[in-house]
Image (cartoon, rainbow, N blue to C red):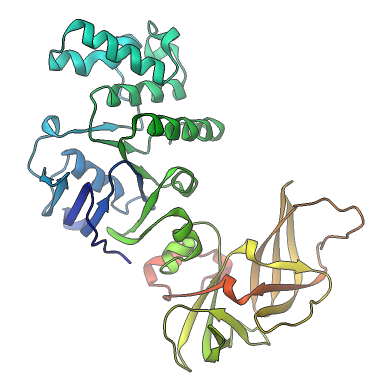
Length: 385
């Protein structure tokens, strides 16, 4: 899952970088298509920012190369690369007006005065800040500063815009608003965006495709839907969203999936989807998302593709649009998310200490590679061995 062999507008080929003998990026090959928003997603220290800095020319790789539109830019200094970077801390000049901040790069290039005026005015219109052009950075909000930083990067018309945790300094509501604005700006200018974040919500909501990184390597590349619905391994499943993990042993084939026994104390067999060949006796690692479970006070009629286990509600948290349950079933505590699609006064929802039945379709359980030691910290403490 960690190798991307396709051709791309921006391409990393076998890129590695170490600091003090520790590899921050380890043989990464990755392709970014022209015009897409491509996110590098992963925990702190996974190598995503180092990869972005290598693209920007701020770091030199120990091995490998970077190509942009077929041209090798690995050895080019930063100012000669057709890329611009937007940083988390904005990096605006505090003594210059917003207009002058945006114009700075064009002045350095020595463009004609009227051309600079037209380009800057157009950018201010794009970020909807024309009426604030005379203000200094200290006089505007964090979200507005980030918009100015983006405009300053875009005005130079780079081929790729690099965004390094650009929304990390903003509060939640402002981040959500800026995500929409970033998407609108991208649609307007049509540039290639390489976006670095540790926030899965940002990556899922903004990206055309995502590369999930861990310990300097790419674990999986795909669309947000592919990453979430069909994670390639346990690291990706745990990092993207919430999930339940189970260990079991394959008993045999069951339709398009497999029957699994010995699942964490469950008294029944579990039928699970699988897209890789397995044989009886194989140990397997199962992942089931909390929202895939259906919880009820009465058992449902058994079906060949439906799994059902009995449990006790240990915890429930009402969240308005949904309720999150912690249910002890067998030897496992299930994380279950019940969406409130309708409010029914005559239907008693499961409550604390209730005996309940939790069921799910075979296609909603997914077989993965088992956890490596480096992944264990992503499990809830109650589920770690």
